[in-house]
Image 1: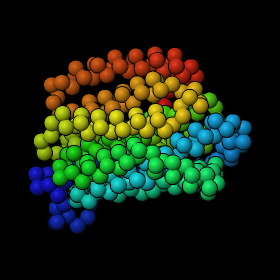
Image 2: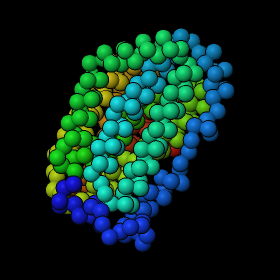
Image 3: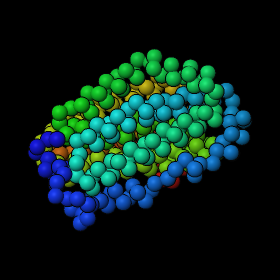
Image 4: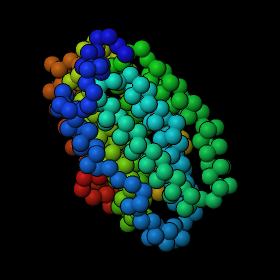
Length: 305
């Protein structure tokens, strides 16, 4: 553990969690606990009926996107959480990360349920071989390995926040597009819950980084970590997923990914003097994105997702 992070080190005299020493971290844990769910809550009966009515092109797209997210969850997100958890000894933070790991297991189980419902074993094997052979998949793994093994604890936190957003949100956006077509309600509902979970995971890593670290790290380094992930994810999204099969434009998804990466960078900015200026730019970007989304997606609602 980095010696300059006393707030994240364990106090050996603390034998129980109470009295709570870091109420903000404990509140984050109670928030994630309140949102806990299991696969027993998922109903896919209507999805199975919808699946029969989908044409081959939409089925192919869903094959790819569900398998891609499952592969990412198993090989990327879980590893980033485990690496961080190894370094944190503070009981309040350990409580959050331990429950986060349990939730990630639930996410993996959920993806597996849908994949087994929609694809036979031969089809699953074929799609995973295709993902493994995809060149950018190697870049993803190397990114995770590099930043989660960094000697800098701050860089590990930035990597966790980035993995929980950049390596997930763009794929989720395609699922939400399917939702707005009125299809696969079980899948859509499940991904809303997983999206919410990942937002909590991302915000927790951001909170620790912003409010509990003493380590110095430059905005340039933060931007580098995020920027590398964005470049990799764009390669994956635009070259692996056949967006044209569902009528989703690459331009709109590209703008969404840029917006999310800018928002993450703003949340992690160390130089607070630049923060207000950046937030104003983001607000203008969001307004522009909203207009483009209405234009390009047509059916997308203006609700939370």
